[in-house]
Amino acid sequence: MDRELLHGTKMLQREGELDNRRVREREAQDLEHGLPSAESIKDRSIPLFNRERLKYSASATYMGTPFLEDMRELGGQDVAVVGAPLDAGATYRSGTRFGPQAMRAISGLYSGYNFEMGIDLHESLRMVDVGDINVIPSNIEKSFDQIDKALAYIHERAVFPVVLGGDHSIGYPDIRGLAPYVDGNIGIIHFDRHTDMRETYLDERMHGTPFFHATNIPNAPATNLVQIGIGGWLGSRPGVKNARERGATSITITDIERWGLERIAEMALEIAWKNAKAVYLSFDIDSVDPAFAPGTGTPEAGGLTPREAFRILQIVTREGLAGLEVVEVSPPYDVGDITSLLGVRVINDVLGTLVDAGKLGRRGLKKEEPQEVQASDL
Image (cartoon, rainbow, N blue to C red; front, side, top):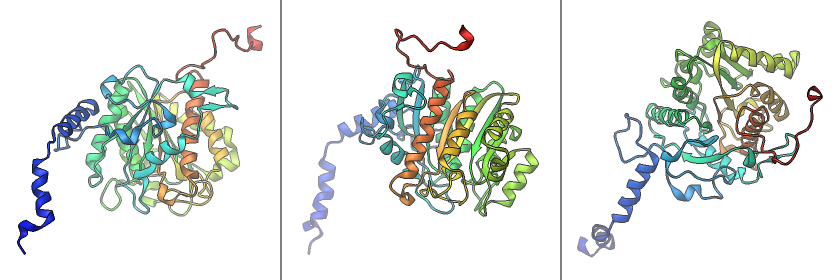
């Protein structure tokens, strides 16, 4: 049979006859709106921020907030939600690349209003969803460059970033992107069951290594790093050794049980802010017991309960933050979306606390409504 008679051969010819002007125009617009990638990316047709429209319709953005298509318009908003869909740093169970998508999807359940806080995030904050960073799944270092540049762009425009992970390796480029915009030291409050302070694992900078490298950044010293929830049987002795030698503070579940939530939270706040100009919050979902957060890459029994986590977060974030990441949500291992739901609750609780403390946005009260009179005002 003649090869020219094959349908496949005819379709090879057909492709050459098809017009691609609209595709090229859209690619050019996406590159213009999504900004140039990091210099380490050789393919300059890849934008820094992914502009795929279908993923970010009104129903698929974080809590239905507007999707900012043109990143040149970033600036003046209070909050930018950005996805870092990377799981190249996972060493056990992959799947965190789907974390941003899952948290966005489940966030649609939330109205933005919290009765106990008396806060409506939609009224208090100008929020946009800027989509996902274009990471390079096969190259963790190029992905770091992309994440670093994307976070730096957000910080340069004085917008508060909420990063949807992604495995915990993104903690390093997230802080690397922040560091040039803080005129002084950065404190880090890190919720986790693991220290994540090995230098390398499997010869790479993986999800067990971000805070070794973050604390190599001159203005992010380990003495301002506080790790909450450390413990269990999956820890790394080299990581613990590095934490000890660098002067990091590791707070265990045993400490929390002995000293109480409030006292531990106050201690964490004091250490993170000591001689620091800003504090960054990194929340690994595996800091919460897998009974409540099964969808994660390296689950460790005996972690925090959600209510314990919420209470500590309320205290440690009240002095303000420079940014927030929620990492290690792995939807393929989730049950009924409860891990994604918890990740969204952590984000909203932190944003609500920042609003309530006057550190972000505004309270959103009607002008004609008199505020409650305090005893100190009488």
